[in-house]
Image (cartoon, rainbow, N blue to C red; front, side, top):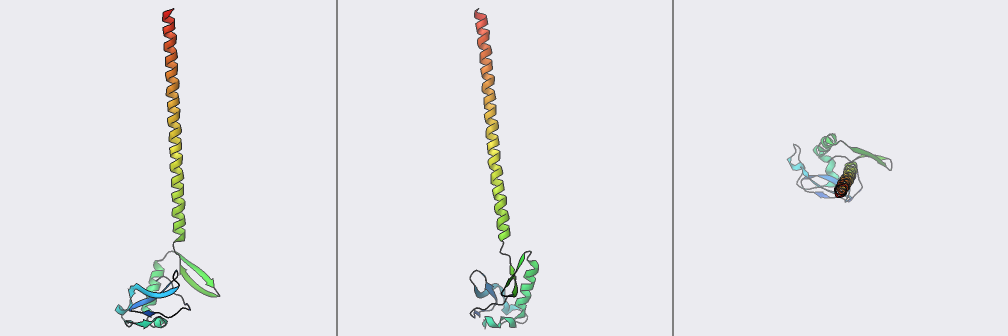
Length: 144
């Protein structure tokens, strides 16, 4: 419902819904979100997909949906221009990149935390060793 296109494909018997082309399945099918029997000029309960042009309200739905769609990719095959909806690939790529960046930042934070904890531990050991040395020197001085 977001593009109008003409295809050479076997005819489909629509049963009370607007016809739509499934890009992945490469076939015509009923659009169960668009019952054309309820339109002011309704379609019959059963009609051939080749007669879909007779039910213009289906095309109005496409135009309404196109206005709602933000991303539309225009392709040209064999000199025929068609507006094909973007399948969300850009969104998937952006989300993937953001997740990767978040994972890398999390790993960096863990590494920095462990290094800081190790430094503190080394500082405490060094400090404890200095105290032990001082105590040893004091006890040796007292023994003399």
